[in-house]
Image (cartoon, rainbow over all chains, first blue to last red; front, side):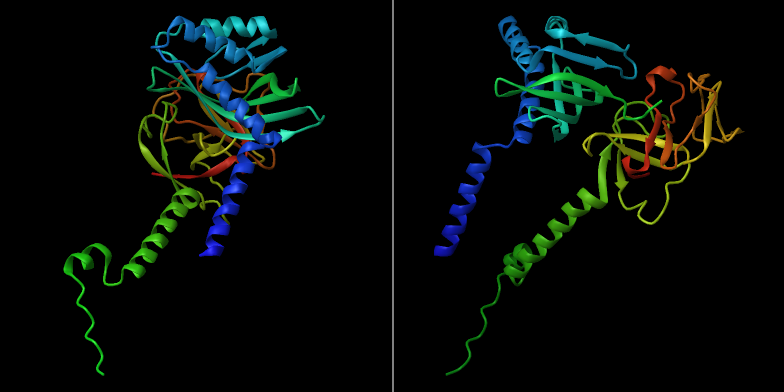
Length: 162
Length: 175
């Protein structure tokens, strides 16, 4: 039984090391998942919680961040800079039914610079916890600022080109 | 010394665990592994969301995705397929309308492939779509397909359709 104990111990230590010292790709993935959690809010959330979620969302962006959205059913739009993004995030907090954003299939590519990376992902948004409102592919361009990965640019990608 | 008689297995144990619980456990594990493998990699269960494949596929219906359909076979015009996004979690369900190398355009809702009108019995009603908007016609690349949903009663700007490479086809949707 000694060998079994050693194997269990080794696996436990390996898992702990993997969880405690994530590599850059996992840091980025975790950051994007935290962003989706920050954007999401429930209709039961009070004003303070909604305000806090705006700040939590903005903490994931660089000051010169840019968001390009061009999806079916919505007008193409580009948001430039922290203020414009903050304005839209604040506006979204007024949705009566709340918003639930989830991200899936995050594919991280590090580079070209040491503090640069990009992440392809699919995000879904639901309102009122029921029907799927939208599913959209995005490419996030990330930059490491103050030892933390932040979003410099979000670009919506059309899965089908037309 | 005489061989002891094997203890009779209680009937409830035979029903619940079989005559040999170890063999039953192994069989169960193999079955679960095969089902999980099959559902993950061969016949993936999917749920239809949204109106773009109406009236042939309703919102909320459950279907299966045959991931092996195009192993050794080419996707065919009229096939209903699932198209990957950045992964397999969210898929677009569309019909293949035009094949690699073909010239295609939509005039007043009618699809023209290489200049010939396409017979589309799966589209009962259609809006007068005109596509492409920036050129006379779209010539598909050597590895490209045109995918459109069956619901052409939607305004064109609200209907997600277009061109994508073959490697984005996740599989064929089973009716």
